[in-house]
Image (cartoon, rainbow over the protein chains, first blue to last red):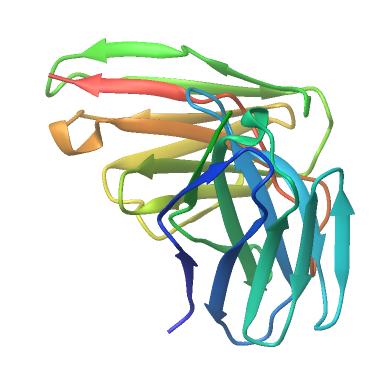
Length: 109
Length: 114
């Protein structure tokens, strides 16, 4: 069964304290893995797409990596404005997307 | 911004009444989607469209219907709203068919069925 699991469900960090969010997946035929950021009361905002194991993408303090079974979203020296829920999704076949439940990140000053 | 407008943004309705949510895009993307987001379930696909008048069911389509008469508009209808359909509804679009096409989301429509 195709599924996506994110961990932890919630993460509290001090400003400047680096950490990683995990997205593990079980799908047949990965076509793409996506990371989104979602602020309260807003729609998910696209961050990255990863296509194959070994690929990495960076944007400001965020870096996403991909292996054959999981993806990590590394947050380096986070700031309070990085607080949000981070969603992971995989595309397993044409137009079939599976979303994880998200990791709620809270960065305290 | 992905050029997606959802309306209404907030609605309270009574059980048994019909409700229609509208999604309008300015990107001329072929694919449009309706998702619902609930605590503990993440985003779940209700219906999607791959062209004008071409639609298909997602994983939670019972109680919902959709229509797409123009490329830019995708309507989601709850024929007879139930309390279990209280949720946040997101419209999304993607530009291409095939592997790794990114989905972009609208701002959401908050629906409460009382």
